Length: 222
Length: 341
Image (cartoon, rainbow over all chains, first blue to last red; front, top):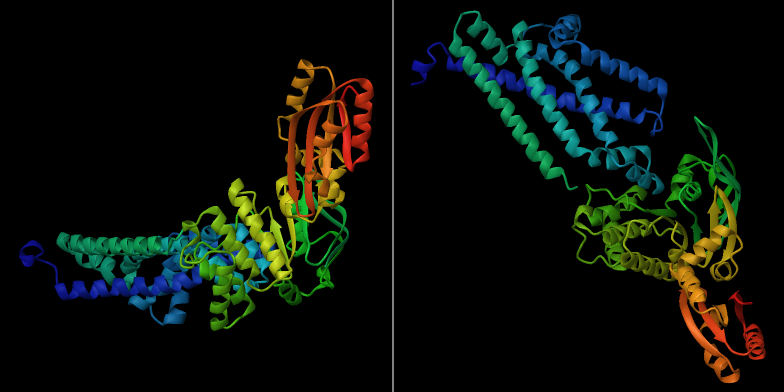
């Protein structure tokens, strides 16, 4: 049945490609979450009138975030080739895609983290201060817990963006479903391969969105 | 307990300097409920935040429990803040934490062990009357219950001072009274010094021992609540006192009455303390040949005793009226003739 509808699909190759996509997405989401959270916190805390209010530091971080967020991903991959070679040692395979994926996505997520933190009621931060909380206690006991729904929905959006980034990374040799659709599907004129790769990417995206929505709803006690 | 000397706070804005707090001196005693009243923009929110250094004063000294607050290192200030807790108009609870976890929050900050926290939270839940609500989230509570959580949280570290920032202004009158009763209860039970700011004279009247009236950053009048009620000197204080002593429609009612019945004298009697309970009017009618017509009256309870006002019309011959007035002046009642003096 499957071989009549999709005559050119090699199922073991497809499975391998799906694993690569999942691997690249999962690792980059985890690292992007922590890096983006740190950057977003830094952006928020150094903003004027905040815990570490520092105009100079704030504008430096803002510039870095804006620059990396603005470079189109496909160009970012090329620009980062020397950097990737240095830390991964190769430009081929799923690992080689990770630096570009993370550098591209972390600043994007950092902005979402900053927005999430700004939404927190200032009075709650004031209350924590009035109890004698240290800045670290304010960050870990107030800022992060009080913004979790927005942090989770932000990382959901970022994760979906990362899945599509992995497809682009695939084109330059990182493997995964994007690579399969381009090399086996488009280049060899096998429309069925392109179609089934696309379908799998869609399934991955829908599952991520569904999980993200579930967690956000469960966390939100407001 | 709390001493403020020439405290000033100036904000720089685009339109120049704004003096939020202008040379304020205050002395608040241990175990006292001290009220600061003023309209919005009077500087009372800034003043109460200066007490725990959420706002740094531009100049002047703040001493609480012998510590000069503005000279403390940040570590010492955090320790001092654990003894000066605060409740807020909008409660400022953490929505992500249950009632129990919210009350535990300051204990976690202070580094209490888990078992101790559990025991203390149980005590506090009982103290503020939230039995059975420990597992609820703030969003599942009414305003009054949220403020009870706020109070429990504020009391967790066994503070010496409780600052109340418009703590009842977001609540309905009935809930306001129940929260005020709770504040009086904890003031007595724990010998806690309470400083509160409000724009409602009702709050001052009901629970405060002493009051300061603020206008444009300055304290314009200060003293025992009953004395301030008796002899308000500043126009703003008179306005605030009227909020609770005279029903809103009094002035209109009296005017209407005078135009309809111009004969006789209209007199306002003000009773302070014990006199408010005595049968003065009965005595007046029995001893002197006058008719008395009661127009309007109200007795108000304060922490220092009752306070009442009574508007009466007295009719009779001139000599009888003169003797009646003499009698009223001789008893310890403030008499003010409003019409036909």
